[in-house]
Length: 439
Image 1 (tube, rainbow, N blue to C red):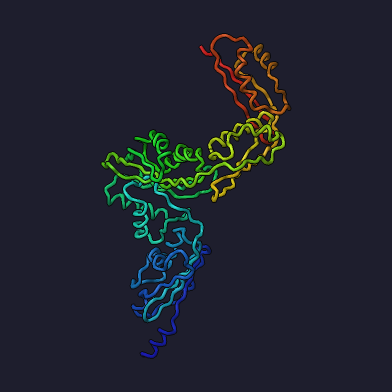
Image 2: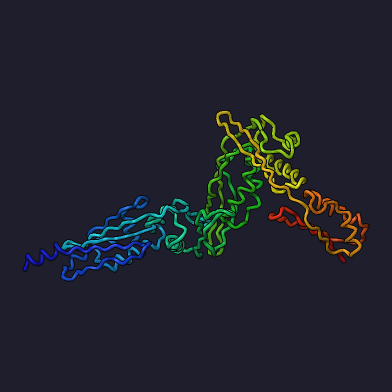
């Protein structure tokens, strides 16, 4: 009898596998006659892991060595891993023996991950949140898949951190992207408590730029604290301070909040903006390229930058916008001028190639005049000098509107508005002039 049982135990080998992408059922085999010790999980091996440790994957699967397991437990473990979105494929196989069950997981990791951002969890530092999350969520390493339950697990963990601190708020998250761009991050924030800014500081700013930065930051006092909003303000209000002085590679770090007052109704913070100005660049030379409608002699006067002077990127942007308006007077409404910078860090100079793309000529389409009587509408139409098919002059409609009422000798108070409809399909521009007599 003992020999028969031993032979039975050695002969029984149960193997099952399932792939998430295919949902294929595991191969069945009977486990009848095995002792209770055969169902104890004695080992769990993971193959295919690069980003995660074996222990992290096993924990995320909801398994522990020493627990009693069955095929259903492995099915649930595979489903749990697949639901996270961290893997593109998960398969398993296992063996029963008298000593216990040995599990093998075969995985393929999802390479499409994006970073996380903490928008306003001001009660914790970023590093503290990362450390606590890595301890609470086995598969969290600072990045998350765009789909799956892993982001929900992080959100639930963050909620528990707030509850432990007695913060009366709810954690939510959004998948974020720049306008017209792909999803690039998952931002977590807390709603409920009011979080306002008291003071602002700039870590790393030199005395020459500090007064300008502080002046630009005054409007932030008493505003709500949200890193996503502050990041926009950095680009709009702070970065130009440096770009106008030739610091072309200035970088701002994440705003750091320090809680100075905390109550159930309101949390007040001081905000520090870390800034790395980088080196200051001077202009070496500027060249035009791609222009044929206007010669360099016609375009060059728009530029205020001089060789040997700090590379004022703000001024350069304004100058190129003015040059684009010149193209608009000839119907080149889609013209663009792209400054291509070539840096020489050894000499701290920058050379620019101004790449012009003139595009197609747009022509005058239909003119519509609204709000005037028949007589004045006809008179105004006769005064309009752009005829259908003429190269469109983008500066003309506004100039015409400014003098239109005077040309008609109309009395009283009139409101006026101008609307241009650009038709890219046939490269025409329709113009609508609206007039409204005010009581």
